Length: 68
Image (cartoon, rainbow, N blue to C red; front, side, top):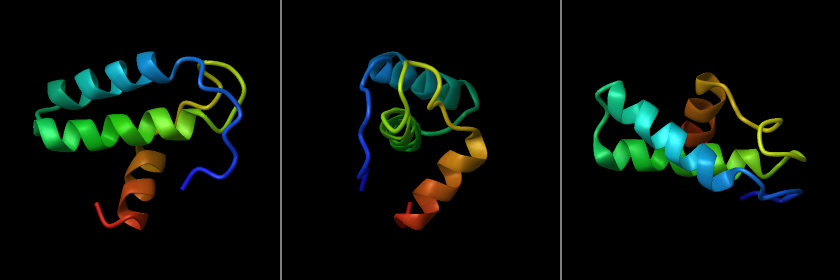
């Protein structure tokens, strides 16, 4: 799923931020959790807490590739 985990710095923060952003957009708790999990997982692919943060389009593409 994430073959190149480089750094987990910021994964918790990115999860929380993405979860709250999705809730504010009016998404369900379940969808918000899926988005937040994708954001934090994608974030592990680059060094540092912010360098790997994906765009919303990257997250939706990632989730659609996994049937979400």
